[in-house]
Length: 484
Image (cartoon, rainbow, N blue to C red; front, side, top):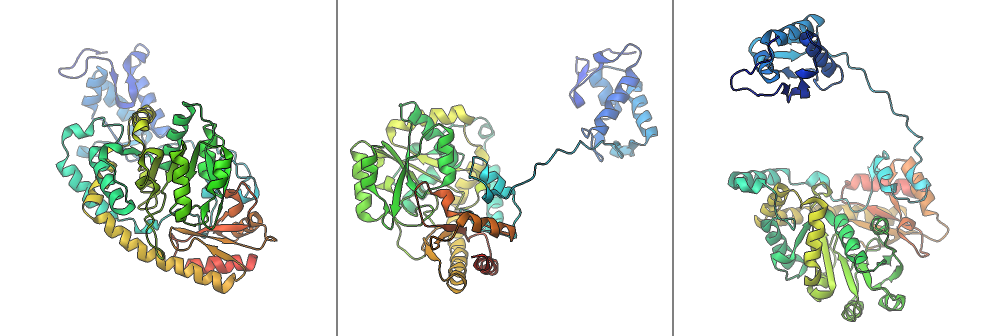
């Protein structure tokens, strides 16, 4: 039994391949041991059908055993019918007596709307099958600019220096921060230097970072609009922050109630309030900014402000009062949630602490997608994409609104002038949770408005339209009408 070194190969008696260690073999039983190790790897799927075994000479050198030991093991597996020699193609796994894992016991899945909206409700709802998914906040994913993204990715890789493949700045690549800075100035009226921008993994991470920032200052609550995003509230609650509700009416957040509440921090969606779609009117904006100037802190979630159809642009609050507004946005509604790229533009006094929180969380977002997105922004491709989806979204919005007029005349439409969703409310005798449950049973997935409310509110549904065709939207509304 030869365990001597073999030329320039490794000096240990182990191999990276399957983490084999010849020292574990019993004396005089190397061939039996190696055969068993390979047979086990084939059976449990570590060596799947079609995979190639290392050349016998190379594996023998790595294990520091004679080549005959490896050849013998390969021969036994060949006789068993598990591998086959294919000449220059090598030794290939051709059969595997894989034992299927024991099936996991599956609990009876209760339709998500039939239970209280707990922390995993959105996971359960996403998993629920549906013919027509009207989940709000989802852009037209079929329109993702694949060709433009690939062109940008190739351009980035062609010019990338080797050092760019290492660990980067936790606040984001300078290239993307510069591109985001330009984008925000052009579309949201925000004059922010690239150094003021922090790249994060979506608004959800921004919320977690905000929570930690506040907890460190002894602040344990964030006032929220009501109605407001259930998901955002849940995220803050998970960080042990209370979320007292401040009512929203046709003019947006009721700032006088915010003042009376004594809250020091408020989270708002002023350009297109979620889920009602109202815009924070001018006088309310001035009142809210004055509240902030008096010592309050605003967390501005600008989640879909680029999507507007029937109203003029509304500047971001951050553009008017930089030192009391933490601004956040993302590409989830611009391109796709799967990219997990967003940004925070904080007041200067919080910047270093937020960068430190980002570094401790994950050392920073992946650099290659950042650079690809930056190229997409700087080349004008993202602007072209935005113009393209605007036309599609408007057509779909119109189709849904027309269907509601035709089939649900008792419903009132809210927030149709912008965004990717609209909300409908019903007379008080309608149970929106029961309606959403029945809709799901008929293949239509929606959000009951009551999920997003802490205070009493008219029943309703929150309906996303951007990801569905006009025909599907009409069919969905027609189905809802039969259930109502």
